[in-house]
Length: 89
Image 1 (cartoon, rainbow, N blue to C red):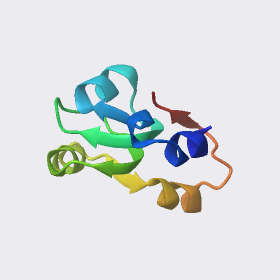
Image 2: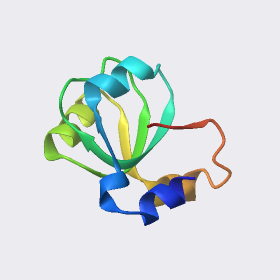
Image 3: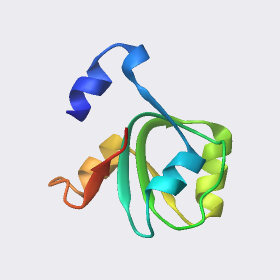
Image 4: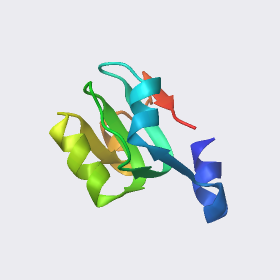
């Protein structure tokens, strides 16, 4: 499912703001965003985010919250089974 999103047109990629991610996740979640993370908003809990790309401000805010930002490839290496990973749309 993620591979179809990534392989398709750029217009099909997701853009997720931090405020939306914060609202729809909880402490300790691991999420995959098949697109770009944008820096609007902030995170008030720690989580792991894997995405294709992110804005500079998003990276800074994610790190400041104590969360992890990975590429999708890095997440696949760390968790090849994909257990306990949520897909964020």
